[in-house]
Length: 94
Image 1 (cartoon, rainbow, N blue to C red):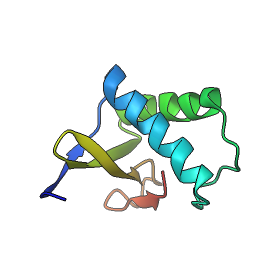
Image 2 (tube, rainbow, N blue to C red):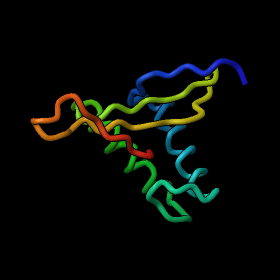
Image 3 (cartoon, rainbow, N blue to C red):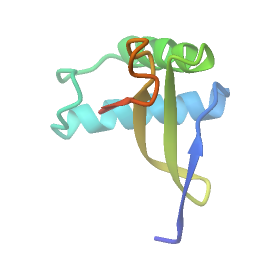
Image 4 (cartoon, rainbow, N blue to C red):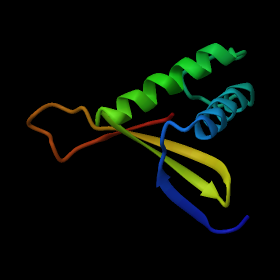
């Protein structure tokens, strides 16, 4: 493994496909990420469509860990917090 780089993820078709594949593989391996096995391709696509759309609206930040050209992990920061907590975010597992 080379050096890992963290970047904000975008809605490109290539990134979306990697996210979908990673989510399906994670669920199949028993990962506790709010889905049950078997996770359908459509459900995984829908999840990432909604998540990345929310990120584009500024409601969350979806970060990806890259090892070269390979997406090896993600984390989501939920930014849509109450008005009295503009300095906070919640970490989500997908």
